Length: 93
Image 1 (cartoon, rainbow, N blue to C red):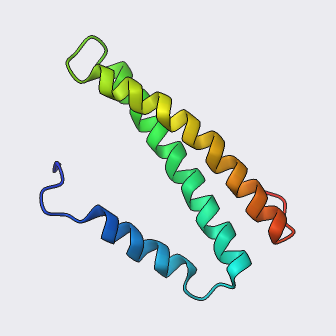
Image 2: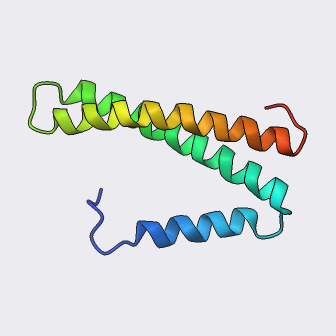
């Protein structure tokens, strides 16, 4: 397990997102991106919740708890984005 080191997470994410949307029309790209942020926010929240529980009382607990709370809000916003993008392409989730 690595703490990041020299990895460029932003560039990696940009590459993945570009690959996921390269051949899509704007409507479909919007839906693909909205679904991706919703799933990423959900994974982040689950990770932060588990780590907050695991580190409760420890030095890193406040940061994990704050990340859990922030990611909960991100899920709500991402869900709205996903639902609106689905409406644009005329789909239900």
